[in-house]
Length: 556
Image (cartoon, rainbow, N blue to C red):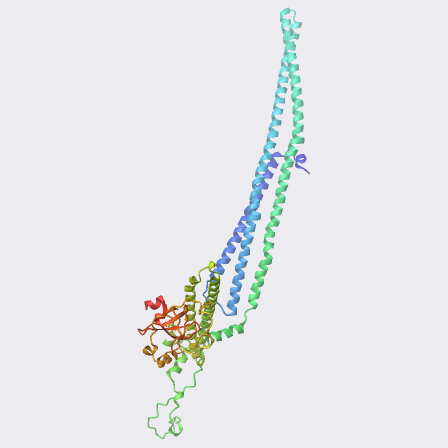
């Protein structure tokens, strides 16, 4: 069934129907827009909810309890779920709402064009009908005038009193009227034939084609609505697998909750390491009172042999302080944090010190890797001078070595505190090299920076006068200073201008251009205390080295 044949006379109704179809399409577009706005608002509210309950945390505030970890996992999954709602809104806006709005504009333009063609065809038919109607009315007027002339001629022709001229005049008038009527008849017939032809074309060709175009347009609109309905559902369907994974992640997080693990974490977090307090002894304040032999007197047991109560069972301040676990904390427990964490219970102090040692060890390893990389680069520069100046890397190498020494000192200090907590004797271990003054570095071509230097080929320079170590320090002074387990901090670095054999006790062997750490300045005796990368310490002549002090040591 086609509109052109079945609805040939329903132009106005088709005009209203096609307008209703476009209005319905725009109404559906508005529905999709409000739906995607709901999705956007929903996603935004979900993200704000996640942000509210999952604020930024420092490293120390990271959750450890399985219930907290699972909750934050659920929040992450919910954040991903919110992202999928945003995807739904974006896809609806692009593939459904945007497409509908563009199609609606195209439909309006096409409908306007078809309706204009229909109105134009109707106007042309109306014009043809008007011309035909005018010729018909003219033919009718001419026939009436001819009839009047015929009557007038017949009356004069039968009138014996009428003159011949009057009769001839009436006859001439009749002829003219009759001729005009015949011409009007012919014109009317032609206009009628033309109108009938145009009317047939109008209702059998023009209008069916226009209505067919309108029908095709309306059917395309219906198909488009069906496609957008499907797209509307497909947008949701595409995110269902990802949403299912989010929900599965939430279920997995829920299954990961372990009450026994959380209980163990509570023990690990709050265990003090103290022993529970012992029994309270009975303190008899009535020993100095005189007693009678009354049977009603309640006697208190006395210590056999007059032995005094064991002082170990007396209430000491230390025992009282341990009771703050179940009551109000003493002032010492509220003291500010100390560097060695001595304000914490033993177990907590041990954990904090171990964590700090691990962190410092990681930083030390980074500095070691950086030093090795710089030394390799320096070695490449020395072999290929066109690639760069080896001396340009020396300040960075020296800075890295200073940082390494500082980190080793910090690690050693924290290890001493850790050993104290664990009840062990502090040892240097593998984290800090030996500082024995009599330990000499191997005689090779490798310098402290890790680069190779050809010492025999270097230009020989005459060293200045060497001070006598016996005038500045006695052997026992060196031994006393090096017996201290705590290493002296690095206050600068120096570069050897000349070689020094370091044969005297307490002195340090060094090669020309070797870089050393300064741990004690020259006190006016011509000697500076230095340390090698290997940890070997000793005195070198101040005039043999070029010294660069650290800025903080200079300020102090």
